[in-house]
Length: 623
Image 1 (cartoon, rainbow, N blue to C red):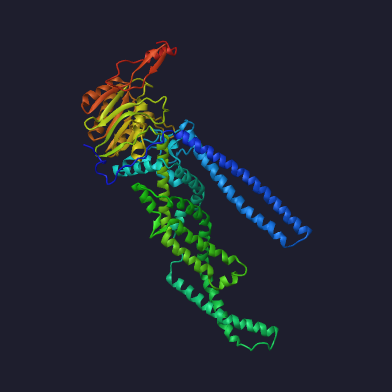
Image 2: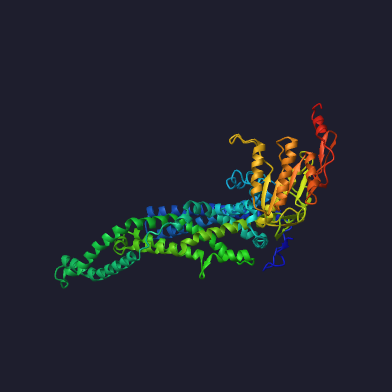
């Protein structure tokens, strides 16, 4: 018997109350963001005009009577430049927040198809259920769910959906608890979505993960000690030699004004200049590589630090979010502060470009010492960059599920149980079907009952039932609410044969593609949920009945649960042969005024009539 974890988990699942009207919330926030954006656009225009006026005043002063008064319009112009940049940043963030709310309204209005992330590249061509359950692509479950901006966040959400059997019940409950906490925090979801969108492209282009794992170029302790010693000797030579050089210069220009100092004092400085030159040349290639690599990535690191700081400011209660927040801190130092230390080193590098400091920077091996410090930072903190990005990715995935929960207050959090394969739900519906057209059905498979044979005519609702069960299983095990009044489900793999087609590229018929898929499903490790639509429909009735019976009998014997649909009534006898481990259910339809009417309600037993001939006559085919 499957045992619920509610009684044994070391924490209590706290789910915030659902917002009763998510659309009204989005519309209210959208109006606020649009008003703010309009105000900021007007401020931008005002600042631009003021800058032009101040520039004109400065020009007039310069031409008419150049004086110190010109500093006033110049100072004002510079201040307005700073204010203008800040205003643009705020306006763009307001517009991004407005787009976030617009996307939410589109999802609630069923106008989101084709406007989001389709995730088409995440599933392999022969994945056991992705295509069958419309997981990816335009109008897919993934496009509906995903609000992640970073590629890592999108991949994390896709991985949760692609591998439902990998998460334990405890992990599922931790995700549920996190989703429940994040569901009501629309401002946080909005802020992270905006911040992540700002950093996503730059962080991915910078390939920070590759840089953090790259070979250490300046790891030799002897070289570092040599650089310190050389710099110390050079500094001493400078202190001793510069007065000698100054004295000689003064004596040369005004003899007799100062006592002569021996030129030998400048000899150590000349020697150190030669030593520095040779040492710097021996290190130059590696130093240039280290400096160039970090300077190219510094802008992306700055953006990443900004996103991390948003998360670091949060205080969470759920175990999962507390653990994720803890990954952004080491020995009391937050990730953003660790990045800030590196950015300060990069800022010090800029000093070498100053024409007055550049000669001294060369003598003191300025770039070499900073390159050593950068490599030391990369050794100590660089490896954590991957963990930081992974943390952001998981939070983005949770935020996607939380947004889904926020937008569907009538959906319920399922009960995830360990043990044998189980799917036990009341009023289970397909979440992608709009509320006004969705028909829900009770479905219970598990325990003694391992198989439901679903009969009925085409378009009566058989395939939709399979997809509803499959999609809700994926949502439940990812940590999201489900389209049901109640659901108990166990972590299990999923295999489906629903949307298979002929393949011209592979030279395979639909029947051959189907038996290959069924072979793959038979090889999957239980616990397993299988969903077979029109099983072996591409062959004759005799072979289909024998083959289908062998397949479902084998799956049931291995501890799998599932459904197999058919409109061939001969296959319904399989359930009688396997009873009580199998049962028949069916969908009905009727002809009214030449039209087929479906109610999409599942009923017990085998369908007793077929409307195929009546339907053919209704469309004008004489039979």
